[in-house]
Length: 291
Image 1 (cartoon, rainbow, N blue to C red):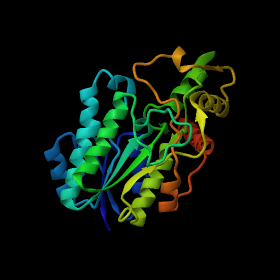
Image 2 (spheres, one colour):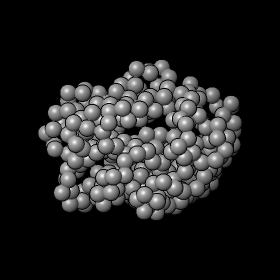
Image 3 (cartoon, rainbow, N blue to C red):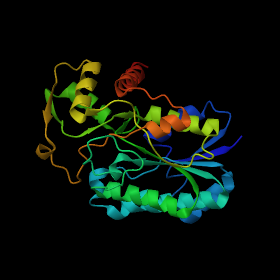
């Protein structure tokens, strides 16, 4: 049975993988910043050698999109340099790296779902550093699967769904942008896809870049409306607004829908619709509050 080393175990995706790893016959070794500083190349090399991991899953990332505009060096260290450290350690150990990237490598100017063959053109620091991480992995020559995802949320940490649940419970109204379109993705669904790839052993011979999100398309406004309705927060009016009315430090892609044909065909994945996964996540949060 192969050992699997997971970085960023305290984040949304890492927490979901911990749930799954607990029921696997394989040994999953979960690390976060306190256990392994992946910006330290020597520390990464020692950890990979010590664990003898056959698969490394990199869930760690600098994801504060607006703050990255003011802290580009910090974003580069975690999104690019650290990815390169993991890739080189994987190469030297003969391991496979599974790396999580983002829809923000695209500028959002398309009018159809982005495929893996479309040329990246990031429009902010976060996207540029994540693309640089993909390039560092490719340059290392390691065996790697890079999975781009989008609009991630879960029961863990800070995310749009949890923010909307709180605001729509407390405020009489909220404005949400309606001219940014993509696909909400439940971290549990992405974790299950990664887990299935590992457990099946099909990461061998299927290296490359893949896109993964839940099925369906919506705007942030549509997502917020559905969240409020599912939670029963009827007293809060969710109002559409334009991106121009809600300025942020970082530009956001207006359209970031991902084409998932390749990952579904390669790994025989069935992906749920975002509404179904949203309802499941809200139900889990409700159950947690009742415990």
